[in-house]
Length: 206
Figure (cartoon, rainbow, N blue to C red):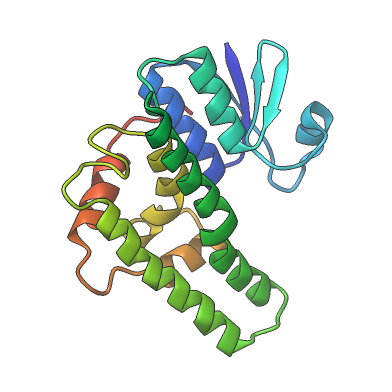
């Protein structure tokens, strides 16, 4: 049994939840108080969730957890078998985590720190809006970001992009409100809207 430490409404936890459900793998959810990460630190040596326990092997960081799930449960796959396509998917994941996430995190830091540099916030907001066009194009003529089957790319991106269309009323996290406010689908993005609805209807394991 896989055990996963989580907090409510975590985007990174949802990545793992989607992957586990896609593969039909059961997992035990261990809820953590967002204001008390001592158990997470004890288990993993750091305070971020998710953290997964694979029969004594502790893995932190959602992309690393997805890779380990794929290794242990290869079917149905989340990465393509073709070497070139697999490399393309890895580039997307790296871009999403290292580049795309910069803008919303920077806006959150500016607001939380009280440094309302509106020029910087507007620049980051423009980056988020522009990226919507890239996702719209990726979904042109296909059901998911990398083809007609769910992949790791969808698991990685959906928990963040979904806020362009949906947010649980009970979810009042500042970062999630930023994701909603700064990437609204104010112009036509039919492919992206349909993809958000499609993935939102998929099961979750946690």
